[in-house]
Amino acid sequence: MATQVIKKDGSKQPFDGEKLKRAIEGAAREAGLSEDRASQVAAEVSGIVLEKTSAQEEIATSEIQSMILNELDNVEPSVSAAWKAYKESKK
Image (cartoon, rainbow, N blue to C red):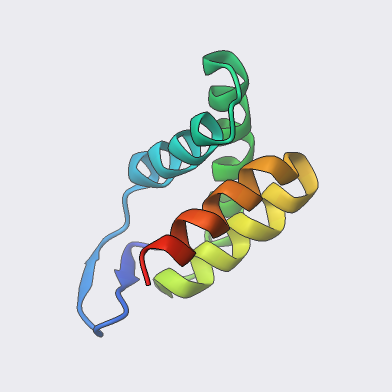
């Protein structure tokens, strides 16, 4: 698993798999999924992303988000749409 995340501003922070999972769960709840389904989607998608980042020391947040969205498009497209809508509202 990657040990460092490179933020948009270039700063680094320790990789936190739980933070990743919480973000996915939040998007899943926003998309209207039940708590059980939100947890299931978060566990599945975060597991795949953690596996894909296992060979890297550092990874950019943009790369992590891209991986998450790609997996959500396959697993639960409504959550991907909620994530994208949230990102757009923050601009």
